[in-house]
Length: 278
Image (cartoon, rainbow, N blue to C red; front, side):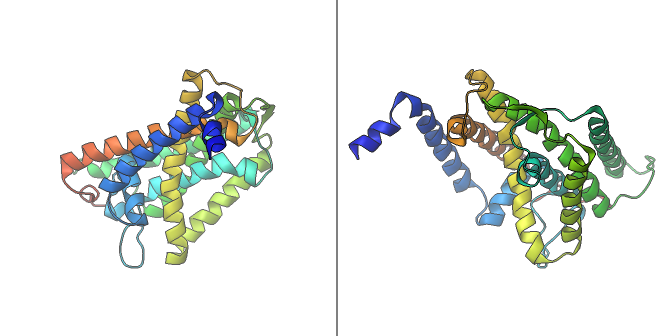
């Protein structure tokens, strides 16, 4: 036991220990004051980033809505695909370059379509008489959200890789068109599974969408922490990157918890905002 304690308190491990303790404290407070159950925690994550309007959300068989609206569900599931797909599906790990211009153009187009559909949908929140081009739908919100999420994850991945790893590769994770098509194929499967409207698929995907929020925020904050602590390109293995990842999670839950608190104080409820017509 003394040797284990000495190992944990060694100068090289102290930051990891401090970050782990901070995360334990922040998570404990957040868990204590958010709705009970694993879906309750997922709702609390969604509550920090999404309007959670019932009519704009998919629902389980018991009519309980998913933690995020249709657009955000797609967006954060797509972000997971963009962040982890190249490594897990394509075997393209620790790639530090952005995709070629043609692929970047396609990714930007996904985001433009997502923003256009969101803007058209927003017109239904405005007073009657404000023009709109078409009636939005949850399947379209989901589809454009997935495409935009893949864009976010795909563009964040090389930034995170080039900051964290000592052995970062000067290649693009999405170096060829078929790499992007493979991620879009996964997104298509996710889209189809949600539209099947079966709880056996909706429950894991709902939890994954909330995990996508945490993952995306943690990844961004991990990059920031790596820069602040001047640890760029020092990690050779996952354990080497652990202090920065833990600090990224600490900041993530401080943000989520802070927004949860402000929204709850303002509304007095964990429910979504008042329903618009569509």
